[in-house]
Length: 147
Length: 85
Image (cartoon, rainbow over all chains, first blue to last red; front, side, top):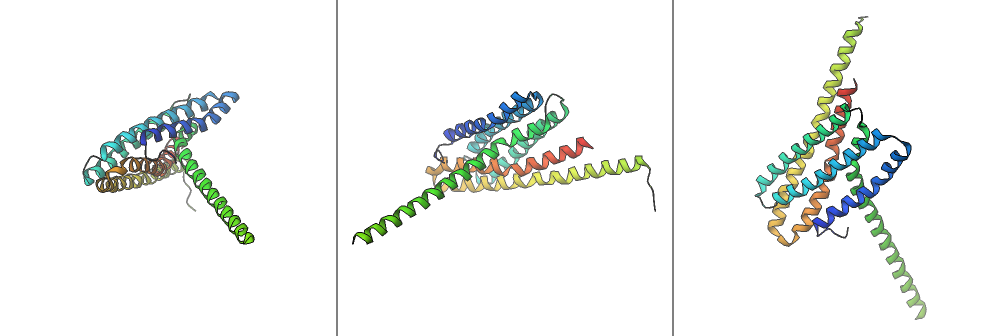
């Protein structure tokens, strides 16, 4: 992860990647004409984006507090976010023009993206290390052969 | 063998579903406690090394985003149980 030292750039990157990944299900639901699915998915996605921004603000505020106060603050804010999720899911379930499962998947999309990003980064790092080991081994062998 | 009227069976099923929804909501408490604990430790880390603030915020953001998933899973299950039956 390139922008681990820059939280502002990192959240833009997370949002960008999430919307990039989400463009596939959005395009599929548009092509297949399932507008309830599309609306539910976009609803969940927009709410998860806004909650990410809210979480960044909360974390930045909590770092200026004392340890115990920060703990209580973040715990309380989590329950507020949880209540927002509850409202979103209940609205998606009761409103016939929104698909409930699509809204739930939209809410999860950001988490899937983060997990996949980390897995890809780990795989990329592992592959690079293996390649480097292979190159080193090859160089050693050629040096020994030359001598 | 005891036989129940269909209304009684319906009531038992509905009560069980609501009870299950209540139990599922217990899973929502765990991430809250965990996130609070992580926030406390993050404050401690920033106090120790203020230059690592950006790194700590990003790591905490990613950690919290993923930790919250289990809470939302339980919420989805609870809502399905409440509204479907």
